[in-house]
Amino acid sequence: METFTTYFLLFIIYSFLGWLMEVICKLFELKRFVNRGFLIGPICPIYGYGVIGILLLIGTDTKDFLGVFLKSILICSVLEYFTSYIMEKLFKARWWDYSKRKFNINGRICLETMIPFGILGTSIVYFINPFFMKLVNMISPKVRLILTIILLVIYIIDNAVSFNIMNKIKGEIKKHHKDNTEAIKKKVSEWLENNTILYRHIKDSYPKFKILKKKEKVENGKDI
Image 1: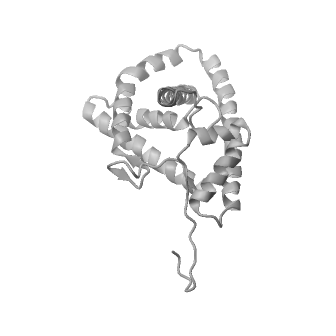
Image 2: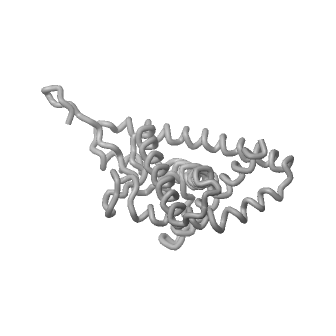
């Protein structure tokens, strides 16, 4: 249980730091606050999962600096690729797209993001995580358990609410299935803008989302 609470608190810390990093980047780019990520709360779980994956798979084998760098790239890139794929299949839209960037794989990951993944992962293994590990270990097991339970409940509720919102967006996309993709995106964007702040948050987080092209059937029965 102590191992679980330690890693869960680390997961929350890195999810928050990832969210904070993205918010700061958008603040410089857009000159305004944007609540980044899929969830409502101030966390981006993909960063938390990525760091926990790095810590578990690399472990104490940190003598090979280049190996840690390359493993960090591999772990984070695989995570980003499958997150993009799963979200696309679940919600019928592409939420980010690197197709126009060089050295991309199916528009889901690209070299431009892989290198920063490696740098961040290496920095976390050698410099950042030892600090946070000591910080978490300073908390008594009882308090750590209470914090874990509280944060886990909040995390589950946030996921449930966010998935409900995304399913409603999926339903809105289906309503306009006879339109072309640009028309659907325009209508869905207007619908999001006219909805509550929880829906506008998704539009702000993924302003370049793309509606998937629906397969159509021609007279001979073949898909196009």
